[in-house]
Image (cartoon, rainbow, N blue to C red; front, side, top):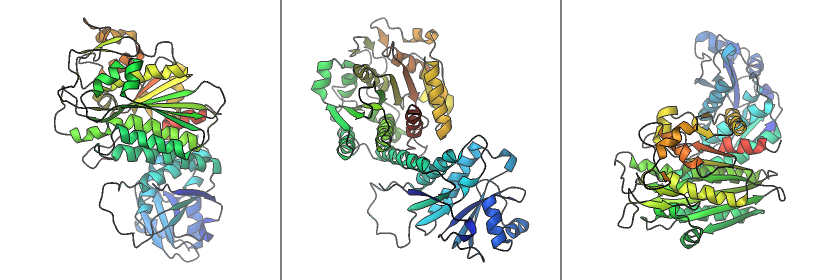
Length: 492
């Protein structure tokens, strides 16, 4: 996978030699600073567009101009910014994506964007640089792994974007985050007959082999049995694909306590004996996007050489119904010793995560964060825009929410009050694996909290944000930006 190359440039917009120059205009015929300079050099060409109604400045609109007199660029892409008084971080993020979407369809290998010069209240040049760069890479991504190979394109495709008034460190961070996002997207988009537990372990091995300072351990079924991971193994026992517990470590800060990322890796979820409806079941290949997300965040942190210690733990399992599959009413014994009554085999993600969370504590981490496509209830509550965040640690919650706002990979906090714990009571085991009809996302978080007592821990339910809807919906790579920003913030 090729990530776009980002670089900084300081040429005046009207004199910059480039296949395509990007400038912005607001509504009500207000030109951005770069657009003003281009307009002056071109004898009022952009203002004439506005006066004739050929450009409006509305968000989501763009106009491509060719061969403007007095302007060195071959093309000028004029992007709508909306009302100037309403231009904020959210609009900038949207505009950056609009511009990148327009660029990707052009027969050009490089472009020069001046959007980073725009004034965004409360945001500095580093934020603008990274946001624009990540938007460009997100729009440039294409999934091609399982299509018939095509001939090389006859026209150039975008490979490099230069940004004016940009910050080098921010672009380096953008490149690393983009690498992690693309890694997560590719894993999520692959079909389950390719991306099974062994495949994910192989991708982790490649990360370890390509980056010094990274170590890998893959625990097999017998290893997990010796550790007492009866909950994880219960979910795995119906599949012909054996489970893997993947453990990557990055040593970037001596003997400091590590941060631990744990990701749900259900490579396909039929629901098990509690079989899901057939319609839409093909989307359950995305049930490993929590694993993909933490692996992508780990990769980005390593590429940035962050001065932290980091452990990434992925329980990779397939949930299938066969004659050996676990059943409703089975009692599983977790690694922690807590027994679990299985009331629904489709509530399997928490069953593999609880053992992985217990195992994570053997590294004595200072913080544990898990990411999981855990509940449809979270999608009902928050839709496709925000991930659900649950933790009892207010400081950790604020740090994660801030990281999400910084990267537009946003989360919303849901309560973990003890009031909800009673819904998990069982007459046959220490805890039931579902909490009934109401507050399903919260009771799932409450279940996981039973296995993280005394630890700084947060849970991200990404069921609504990890992939786009529909038969052609693709993985989004979330929550890689949020997690990487959180880790970056711990180094400052």
